[in-house]
Every structure is written in C-alpha cells, then in structure tokens.
Amino acid sequence: MQSSRFQQHLDRYLGIPLCAMLSLFCRRVRAPETPKKILFIQLSALGDTILAVPTIRAIRHTFPDAELTMLASPTNLNYLTNCPYIDKHLTFRMPVRQLFAPLRNEGFDWTIDLEHWPRLSALLAYVSGAPLRVGFRTKGQHRHFLFTETVEHIQGRHEVRNFLDIAMRLACSTQEFALETWYSETARTSVREILVREQLSLDVPFVILHPEAGRRGEPRRRWPQERYVALADALVEHHRVQIVLTGAPDETQVSETIAARMRHQAAVLAGKTDVNQLAALFADAALVVSGNCGPMHLAAATETPVIGLHGPTNAAQWGPWSHNGNIVRGEMPCSPCLNLGFEYGCQALPNGTSPCMHTIDVSTVLEKCEQFLENDR
Image (cartoon, rainbow, N blue to C red):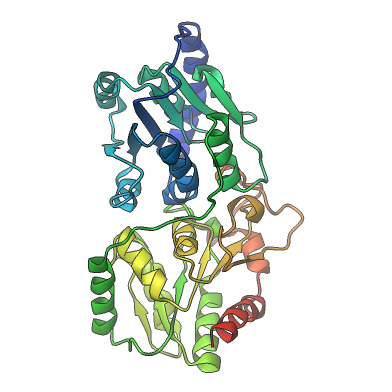
C-alpha cells in the first residue's frame, strides 16, 4: 500500500489497537457457502492488483453467478476497467467514513482483503458487515483480529502464490496462473499515434526504460540515472533499437533528464499515457527494463520481455511473474530488506537511492537485454 510515513504510523499505532478492540464485538454469523455478493479490497499500488488477478479469476470461475465488487484506488480501477471478472467498482477515497454506509448497504456475503499489512483494509472489511471475512495473517502486523478466516502470508514467496492461497482457502480451483491486461484497440491506436508524433518509426523495434520505481518521492528502488543513460546509448549503438522512457505524470523530470543526457534521441512518454495505454505500449515493445514497481508487473502481464532491477526488494517475492521475465539483483549482505514494501534496512544515499542499487552494473543489465533482443531477432 502506498502511503506516507505519517499514514504508516497512524495505521499502525491507531489501527492495531482499534482492530484488537473491535474484535471483541465480532459475532460469528453463518456465512453462505455459495455467496451472492463478494467484495475485494485492494488499496495498494498497481502492482499488487495485477498480481492478485489469478486469485480474482479463480474465485470468479468458481462462483460465476456471484456479483463481484472491487474497492480500490482510481489507478487500480482504471486498470480493471475492462476486466471481465469484476462487476462493480467502489473508489477508495478520503475521508474513509464516506465509505462506511455504501459498504454496509451492499449486503456483502464475503469480503476478501487482498492487502498484506495495512490495518485500514482490515477495518474496512469489518465495516462491510460480511459474515465471511478473509485476509492475510502477516507476521508482526497484528491485523488479523477482524477476519473470520485467515491465510498465512509467507515472506520470500511470490505474491501471486500468496494471493492464490486465499482462493485455495475458499475451495476454488487454482489451475491458471497467468497475469492479464485488457487494454482496448483504441488504447493501442492512441499510443501508436503518440509514438509517431514523437518521431519514432513503427517499423523499428523499441526498448522501454521505466526509471522510476515504487512510491512517488521515494527513490530508493531507483537505478542511478547515469546508468540508464549508459544502457540506453549502448542499446541504440549495439542493436539499432529506439528508446522510449515512461513514467507517471509526476515522474517526467527523471525521464527528461535521462533523455537529455543521452547521445542518441529518445522519446519521453512519461505522463502521456494512462495505465491501459501503458499496457498497450508495453505490448508493442521489444523489451522493458524497470525497477520493481507496478509498471514492471504490468509489462510482465503483457508477456513482453521484461527485466526487473531489484536492490532492496525481494526478487523472489516481487520479481516479474512471466516466462519472459528476468531479474538483476543488487549485491549487498543486507539486500533484500523489503518484503512488505516499506521496511528499508539501511539509510539512503544523498541522492535518495539505496546503496544496493549502485551494485547493479550497466554491463550486467546490458547482457540480460541482449539475450532477449538476440532471441527476438
């Protein structure tokens, strides 16, 4: 879940005692074995929602007649716009109390909390009033008191498999593991028009570099900018590809700085696509290179070759979930330190990045890129 340090402290030091206190008032009510209305809660950043899709799909297939609702952030709901497994959207917004009445009035039979550390989502599950409330029991997070069924969250195990444990607990078949995207032909056409306006040839392969990684304003997962510059120039010179730099609207400065320092031309599309246009763009690319973030998982979902750069983040838990995915890890004794997403084990460097990200050499990443590009050729 993306949040400020203040919000994390508030969630912990207010959320834990509140969950414990409210658990005293929980009444066991028999839940229907075949639910008519199911609520999913996913307040996190985009990547968690993408990785939860195999679980949502499994539950949809097991209960085809149920109405499935997703409570999530606007970005996540945008990604799910054309998702065939979700029937209704509820937008997560502040103040949270505005959600209480809509949640209670829906009359959900089951609520499934897909978060693994925030207490807020557990509280919203409780507020929903569903007689069956399922969520993760995560070590040290003390958020499980309000669930009627819990699933152990296992650190170091890929999040797709952790999510699928929820489906298994609900007796759902979990035979399909692939991620998905549902961008429209309109989205694909629009990004190709953007590429033409940026003077890229649609007949020449392009490589996408997504230099930002993770929470906005938190650059510790980011690979140093000068190394993206060196990698981009090497790819152009050795493989005659075009370079595209992507990012959110408030991440344009990083991409523009990298493009300005390159010896060759690059197209900066940061801030020019929504999440489904970005998926369409990834699908057309020859390769995507990114730190661990939602767009890395989005690229993996398109089955485009993707290289994930991991320093503080645990690649076993958060690596690209794709047959076309590869990883480059930072090499430090304390790496990885992130399993939940916020528990950094060391101080950031003066430029805000983590020391372990500086141990990833350009030559190593270039070698991984060349393996994909040569196979494609």
